[in-house]
Image (tube, helix red, strand yellow):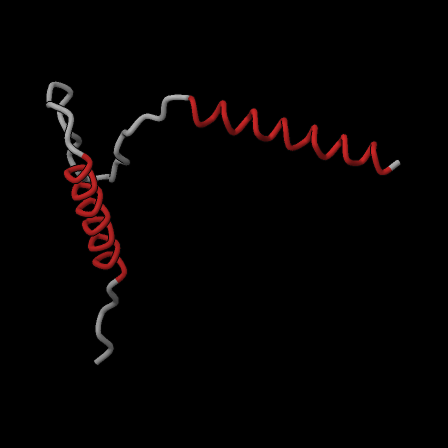
Length: 78
């Protein structure tokens, strides 16, 4: 009975390993997330470096947070 459990465990690990290998081997696109109100790069532009992409994402997040903060401001209760 223990052997059957061990075989099932090994089989489950084998399946998980094969799925993980398949996922790692598939090409992952490096598309930047889009933020409403922020212009996307033109289709003809040269691909940016990783550093440029990271800075662009940081700027987009900052702009989105600033816009959200502006929308949440409440009037003063004087």
